Image 1 (tube, each protein chain N blue to C red):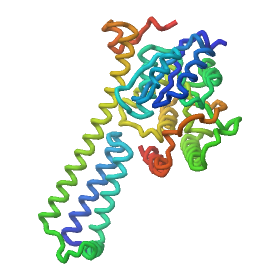
Image 2: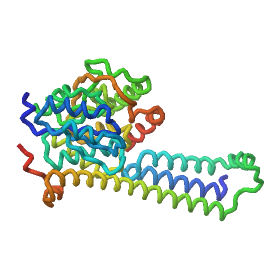
Image 3: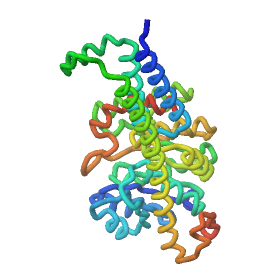
Image 4: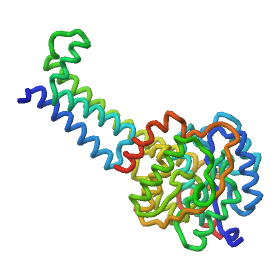
Length: 130
Length: 236
């Protein structure tokens, strides 16, 4: 029988994994981000599903008591906030790259066509057609 | 050559390639005087820009180092905005022979394909690369061939050519996506192009061995994560 902590942990892991797959399918998260959050979700799921693994951690860190509910909630809250921030940074990174492309093309076209605003507007330049 | 009558863009993405970019530009311009040769400088810290300009190329400079996939997409953007009929991409490291440009353009001009990919393995014997890189090429080509039910021998090849229609289709797809990782860019593009109904064709090309430096896309640490990145690309 799963304890309350385990159930919450499993639900949280499921939430992270579903969000991760959803954002990948929507092309809102890059490959590296997907892997990172997939691993985080899988590890949380594993530790929540098999609580005995915690005893390994307590042995490793030399602690005797399991973490409190406040710590668990705080951990999950910050992880979720981190996930959101990671997604936002990934999205902003894409936007910065698109801006860099547009900027370099506009500068190039500016040099080619002087300060003609029509040439910088992104409309097709018919003059180059043969 | 019939191709000379067309409005063709030759894009050469370059990052710190001062030793080779000048020769690549000069030989391309000598062979195809009517083509527009544009070097896309991906934030180089050496003399790449000056060498490319001195050799007679137009230079488009990204404001900082953005990665190969962004440099290539910048080339697509130029091709679209300036309405080029055909676009060809060759490497700045001197491995892609400019003589092969006409070969990859021919099927596009003859309306046999929307996008051509130069294959180092169809007639010739590859580019004598490392076992790891070779393994990556074989594996990814096999996966793409299987998924798209077509025979592809060299999906990682960077010598490619596109029609205007192909450029517009690809740009529309990239506008909806995040940044594609450089190491899987050609795999992702081949899949996307095929999924969107573009006609693809492989053309045998001969490549020269790399004279200076090392490949930036296929560094050992990047190759370790390559299967994982490929899997994610397929999941997308």
